[in-house]
Image (tube, one colour):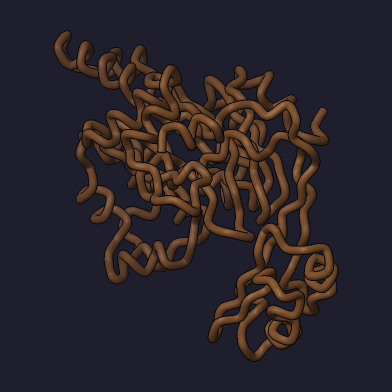
Length: 348
């Protein structure tokens, strides 16, 4: 396994332009025109380029020229063919399967700093968050053999910040909390309960009142969570995350539904997680101040955002993501906040 991963990581100077075929299962169900179209060509070339087994359709990534032409004409938009940049076969962090999305590279958070992730939709920002949270185990692009063990993954990232991060994650030395993208299902989890009761219940750091004031939630303290507007629910979700005594905080699009003033307040609240000076100043004893500084210096924070202004205010460094939505995503190296924003394709 180690030799296979080393080979995948090595630079390939002879690589040529490649294409990836993306099959959308939602558009290729048994009652669809796409399913009927592909079924009639299954095995027609004498190979297994196109296979149909029951309700499932499989298209080989090494299909012949004739089947590639047939796939291009598949109706309903079920098949799309995306050109990949040269050398994109290297440094694969995770693939969801054949004809499916692949993430290349991975953001490298550091303790005591906020790392921003910037990019358009569908290119792997949420996948990166799931991997850093431990919810998704990266397969490093290995689909044919047994998936890599954590020991192989840690070895793969040897010499980088991710080696230490994944080692601590595997040893259960990191407690991770995630503020997911805002969805209606979030409010349903707190049916019949008020904002104040929910936040006080989750307060592990004794900062509930301070956070509520900063995020302007005092006015809705007695309102039921299901009655909150989009912006209020977003601030509630951020507050719930900030209440937890975690080692890793992952915020997925925390500024959506917020106005300018609320975005600044949210950035300030998130920034406070690693701002040891301010935390120490608020402490009521020397011991508490030392603990506040220690905690801030050991805390990882990652923020996924579309808003450059928010990232500039909250981040110490930025990783940009680019690629083909639904096909592949590439994570750039860490850059300082202002420099990172300049990497955005099409940006100034």
